[in-house]
Image (cartoon, each protein chain N blue to C red):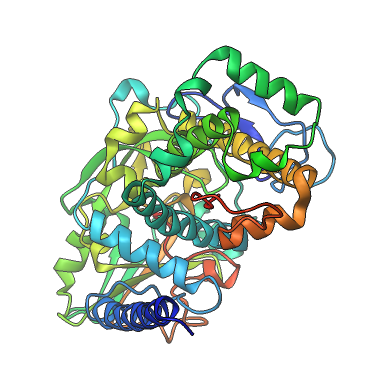
Length: 210
Length: 252
């Protein structure tokens, strides 16, 4: 993004065409008209290597997680909102509670609330597949094999713009997610997430998976 | 240790053994079928190898998207090139009349071709997109000789695995594997949008590899070397790009 902080819609776009929008930052390339009088050092080589190594880690662990989640009933039992939570009123109630930054009760650490379930499902089945599809549509080799993906996204530059927005939303999710964990008790929540066992000051119920 | 945790321990052990042996088996197969890129070392080696192997399995014969004439960019972007060397300026002042493309390495009949020799080969024209690693792109009509036509005329030896191509400018060279070498859209490009290829776009002769990023499309080509290994070229990473931190395979 720093090497070309301009975004376009359609198939093509470059310094000689008008952008959809620009990010007001300096660039690591001197031909980009940013308005800044200096050029940042180029970091594209190692960062692209890192990007694709991380992408493989996401895809491979994601496939294992999705298969396990479907197989074990994790998505059905723990993520699909309970019937009573599937109303706008219930969702707004949880949202209001969150916005007041109220600490959750002990009982709430044993299952996800309606808002959590909705957001997690959107991240797992919406944003992650979308970030992978828009990313693949930036690969000229992948596009030669499966042109339908980039064409259905409206062209290469549209795919790049969408990839940028979906990444920003995912990053926003990460920030809010970690902030909520800190507010809910960092040590206990991290332990619960990593080991799958809630450190319980109260007797265990049958369903201790978080 | 109770029964459950012992069973878990044994299962985990078996899973780990299966994992390690399947990685080992996959490595042997990948080596045999040429799915390991020259820049496979370091902490980014595994990711780079997975990308190259996966895309080679998926794209060995696939064709880069070609666009209708109406989608040719009105203003193609001539990106930055370093100030040309004295050698290039001499060729430019004589209208590239003495420009030569040498073909050497693992070929039966090494050759030295002029631009008009190249134009006597079968030609191909295609509207494909130049995709820069920085993020920008444009579509142009590219006209040239498929690389494989030139190589077939010189007789490529069966052990060939890569073609290394060099710019007249120093320290600017790259290589592609045989899947891209034999690909009909890989062009030694001498014309663009119905005119001679301008110097700002790599004229008089540029390699076009439309299934990879722009930086594989080296400008001002003067030499092709057919080889079975890129180890002896530069730092052995297959291109001057990895020496500057960029991946050799740029199908991304």
